[in-house]
Image (cartoon, rainbow, N blue to C red; front, side, top):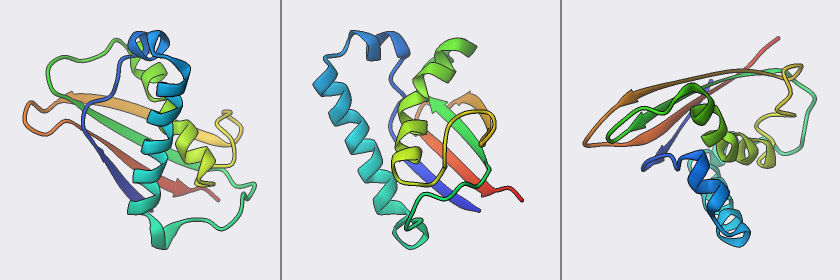
Length: 118
């Protein structure tokens, strides 16, 4: 099992939609860079067709997202995992995804647990 943490708050989906495409691309690249740096020893070397379970725990500083916004806001995280070959594809055939959230006023973050399924 691989555990990764992204410091800071998760950007709401509506804010991502209003963001300029280049800024959103930089945000995704920064996110992938942060994940890559944390998982240097655990990075897959190539894309392999394996099913994975991904659990994402989002700690927001003030209020929780509704369910749709929570899943949409995690899209950049899932795309970064796919770009780094942690997961093969984000379709349900290849990914068992669970996302939860809680409030942490002092330490907003996104915690990710990745596990390969047999």
